[in-house]
Length: 410
Ligand code: ARG
Image (cartoon, rainbow, N blue to C red; front, side, top):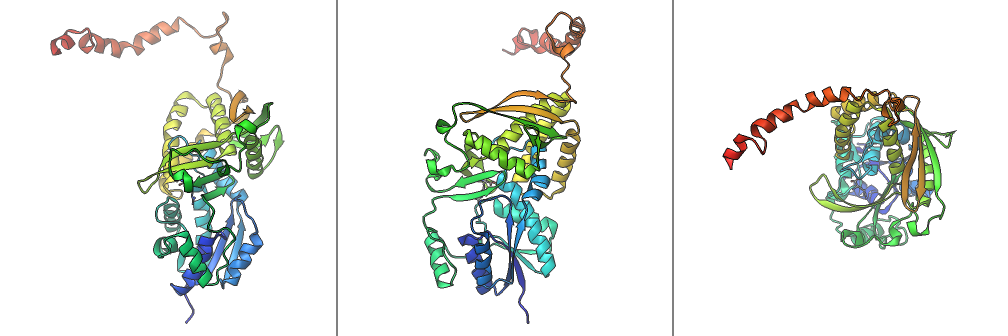
């Protein structure tokens, strides 16, 4: 009888390489690997593929996903100015649903019963993978070897690898951090960072220069948006993935994009997280500046609330949920007139909006100017204040600090 099949999210690192053997030996499954390129640092792609094949997998699919990630995921994150807890631009939370959707597609191609990932039982990524997979196909079963096996430490895992013929990369025992990266940035956890009082050591940062070592003259960049989507840098049109890569370099070179924060994970614990997100922070800053010019006030105010809901929903792995779909519909409606240009200045770890313009701008110079020939009717303000304060005045008279009622209370 042929074996059941499992489709594994494979990164080429030690954890997921050990997963291959574990799934074969402990679970008796045939393994199909999927390695998705979402813009992470990918040394030796061919080597990683060959390593999986040498370990006896049926196939190892390497998928180029950068453009899909940018066009289907980052565009929505930008539209929603997505920042979990107002700080974290969600890089890992954005890539997992895309990878999960590819795992499900490939599971269907191979008629596989199982899907597997290499996440631990403490993090958010396991929830994101599993919620996405099970929303796309509730009949698939998920296996999370790292959560199940008894390999408690890195040395245990290295020993298992040696015993089972899994090649162990040099220095596998001494990488001090856990890293996850993609086009949208880089997350760094673990090691000395687990004490929130420790300053992040220099070797934490690779995409951003130390602001003390950045150029002494500022760099200006103009970003063009069309309907909320960044389409050009300094007038040069380019695909979003390329634009993000370019901005990561420009902003990172000026020391912009570092975050060091405490974060509330889904599973209920707080963790200390360092992030490098130069392009993400830049584009969200620029996008907000353009929305400030083009969104009608009540839409803008409502959007601020819903942005938080969107970010929490995506952080929590609900990318394919009906709530997220409904929120996207709201966001998409708001982006119709978010077209124009934002001028940014990068200097010594800062990014500042220097100007914004739009053919759809709602800014009316004639109304806003303090010059004498304004079109704003200042006399109309009298009636406006009269009506606007009526409720407050009524309350003040009857129950306010000087009212009889309040005095009788004390
Ligand atoms: N805390 C971040 C998040 O939940 C980053 C996770 C990074 N993942 C990792 N495997 N190191 O989105």
